[in-house]
Amino acid sequence: MTMTTPRKIFAAAVAAGLAVAATTASAEWKGWNIHVPDYPVSVAMDDFIAKASEVTGGAVSGKTFHGGVLGSQPDAITQMQIGGINYAVFNMGPMGPIVPETNVLSLPFIFKDMDHMHRVMDGAFGDKLGEAMAAKGLVPLAWYDSGARSFYNSQKPINTPSDLDGMKFRVMNNELFVGMVEALGGNATPMAFSEVYQSLKTGVVDGAENNWPSYESTNHYEVAGYYSLSQHLILPECLCVSKASWDQLSAEDQAKVRKVARDSADLQRKLWADRAKASQAKVLESGVKFNEIADKAPFQDAMSAVYTAAIAKTPELEQLIADIKAVD
Ligand code: GTR
Image (cartoon, rainbow, N blue to C red; front, side, top):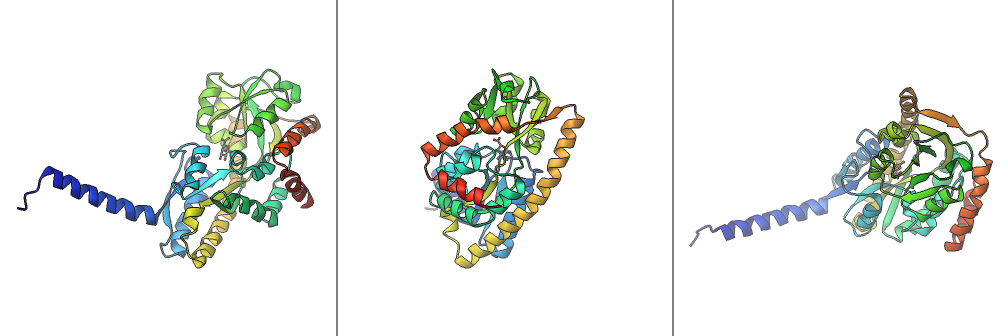
């Protein structure tokens, strides 16, 4: 009898659905990104996946989900470790809890400037850190820019560490950043990026810290109008691939994908330089009160406690700090 029962239709649909899902899962990479689609990271990620598909003849293809719709960075890192997310651009700040060696990048004032950071990350040091990450299931292919992070808040300009007294700052998910704010005399709360706007607006926190483009793209400048140029963190970001996905590619395809990843970093860095200027101009025009900090030495001096605590927790950091300092 060939009667089609609802049960048979259901079974056929499930079978068809599963078949589609299985094909899609093996062919299509899912990309995680926290930023809005026109952000430099986002444009470069779209470029990366399009080119990766081109050069591998479709062995790699995929789609980037922008705007944090796939969740927060700490969750996405865990997802990548098990292959649920195939590629992403992660800020290296919240990488420390997973790969402790990467905390060296989160030490305030570790880099002299952006060029120094590039020289360090694009050289042997970046490869060494990459190995520690790969051992945790995350393969970095290229380093993207994220400028320098400075403090901003809804109350007043910051000129000395004592200006942080009694204020509460949102920090990224890493205890090291709590220690950083406390060493300056403020209070800190780790919080997901997506929650910061509302928290600033309702006064759950008085301030946060970020680069010009993120301060602008999230509209934080509308609710925290004092931006003080502390530039305490120069944190690179990594274009990473899940080791589970990476290991499925032939060595030849890996080389091709690595090349287009590096090309996308060149693009991202160019876009970044332009966006940083444009974002700064936009927020200043809107009335943000901006100040440079004449003497950063008291901020830098206060960080020795942060370095000591970080090294006590992860002794490998001592050598990694020396490695960075050895790069001119
Ligand atoms: C941005 C960075 C994001 C995210 C965010 C944050 O500058 O690009 O990946 O780390 O800061 O503060 O959470």
